[in-house]
Amino acid sequence: METKQAIISFSQSEKVKSGLIWCSQCAQIADNLPAEEKRGAIQLLQSLMAMVANEAQLARQVSGNDIWLEVEKLMNTARVMVDSGVAEEATYHFTQALSQVNRIGQQSMTYLIENGILS
View (cartoon, rainbow, N blue to C red):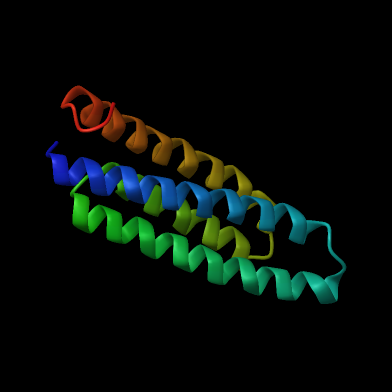
């Protein structure tokens, strides 16, 4: 890992983690809404998921870290769940993606600390 790659991976991991937490919360909330409100919540969730997925794709392209591929796959699976009308099932996939993003952030932070860039 290079310094630039570590900085980008760490920065993007923080952004994507926040987005995944939001997605998970939206999916859980949408599950408990009346039908007419649920449609709007699902549309909001789909938009949010697209933004988070774009950030994960950007992170992979810029950082070159292949772990982002797994995050993208998990996000795609979550999208299928939401699009299929079972948004509550997407929470598992958001959690798995969050775990991978945490791993990326931890690896990046470790590299930055070991190289004296962060203290």
